[in-house]
Each structure stands twice: as structure tokens, then as C-alpha cells.
Length: 349
Image (tube, rainbow, N blue to C red; front, side, top):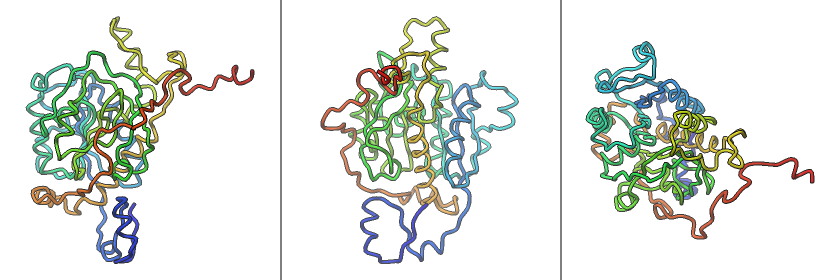
């Protein structure tokens, strides 16, 4: 929540430079409060599992949030009960006249396809166009992030020779950014993808900024300068066992090219319980995003189209470090064995 300070207090300039929300008393008195309205475009096959992961993170915020669920009409889900979809999901046509504080776009297991080969690509682009005038801020996840970066900013997708699979260190690029405020210098982020993004396309686009970057996984979190769009290329929403379930699923299919999850099972032993080493930053990211939206969204959401047209959405502040710059000392987190394990037998000796 923001702090309220007297108008003209000298500390205001310092707080502003560190991007800490501080309201003048006069502004605070005039604030009108209402629940945030969020719509989730769920593109994952197992929709209930994804719903649970995202709602778990949203629920950690002290802000009241009203949530709707959207699905595509040009692709029929075969992994979720039809009654569930009919009861809880609507197509874009049901939302066209609605305005939202936030939109969440999930990933989808279609990274191996060219964007135009995805059967709901045209509808996906239509939803993004709708969101550009009806949504204050959008959070894109994994494939959703790659697809939006391509469609809206021309950032090309790069197919990987080997799947990026496991939990990888990311280096914080801006300690005072609203979205990553409170992050440690090294953040762990789960990844499960066969594609990445062209980093040159990102760094050459003045509308985008890289918020976290890793030597093995590349950019992990990006945003537009005004935070109206946030792109998470990893899966901070994943639960503790999600990567293990994906690994076991692929192994059970008899696939011969299944990568072993990196930095996930202690001592790379799948019989050991994996470490849930990204939960705190996942919670913090979503709290920060919801808090930023809460503080900057208009009370009357019908004002969103005009604010976007005038370029008055959110904030546009300088970031402290260059995009996509790793640590200068080439430090590699968690290199070598011993990841997350206290061997009590060795300790006794």
C-alpha cells in the first residue's frame, strides 16, 4: 500500500527516485476505492490447474480482486471438463464492452509452431487489440509473453536446440523498479520451454525494458516502460511439483529427448523432494503488479481508452541499469553439486 505524506515534504524527491509510492494528503483524501477487476485468458490445456496456480498468487495480495475467465472460441479444449468451461468461461464476445484493471494471458504448449500456425492466432491478436483499449495493464506468461512481444513489438521467437527446463538464476536489472521492488539480486525462476526471444530485438526497442536476465535462460521478466504490459518468460506461477509432473509425463510417453530438470531435484536425484525455491519472488511479483495497478488505474475504467491514447498510463521512469546486462563478475549461482541439500550423515562426521 502507498504511504501518505504532507505535500511538499523534501523526502518526496528521494522517494520518487526510488520509485516508492507516496501520496500527498490532498490526493489521498480524494481517492476512491473499489475492487480490482481482472480477466484471465487461460490458454493452457489443464485449465483448472492453471487457474489454481494463478489465483493462489493473486490471493496473496491484500487488495480485493474480482476475477473473470476467458477462453478462445477457435480452439476447443479437450483436457478440461466441458461443464467447467460452460460454467466459468466466456469468449471475447461476452467481454467486448467490459473494461478491466488487468488481463492475465497464460502460456500454451505451442512453442514449436510458428505463431501463424496456431489455430487461434487470429483470435489471439484480436484479444490483444481489444485489451489495448479496454485493459489497464496485462501480464503475459511464457508463450503468451513471446506471442505478445512478437505481435505488438516485432520481437522474434528463437527455437532452442534443447528445451530450457528447470529452475534457473536470474539477475535483477533494476532494484527500484515497481514490478521487481524487493527482489533479491539473484532470483530463481522455473522455465519449461523450447523457444526464447531475440534479445537484440528487445534491446533495440525503446518501449521495452529487461527487468531480470539469466546467463542460461536469457531474459526472464520484461515490461514496457509504463508497465502497461509485463512479460514473464518463465513460470513463477508453477507449484512445487509442476516440473516433476512434466518430467514424469514426458518420460512415461517413452520420449528419448526429455531433458532432466536443472537445479530442481537436490543432487539431481529425482527420488528426493524438489525445493520450492521461487515461491517468495513469485508472490512478490504478483503483489507488486497488483499494487502498482491498484495505485495507478483510474477509478472509472471507462477512462482507460483515453488515458492510453494520451500516453498517460502508469509511470515512465528511467531504469538504473542497462537492459539484459548480467553481473560483471560472471558469478554463477548454484554451480556444482550440493544444491539445496544438507546431508546429515556428512554433517555428523
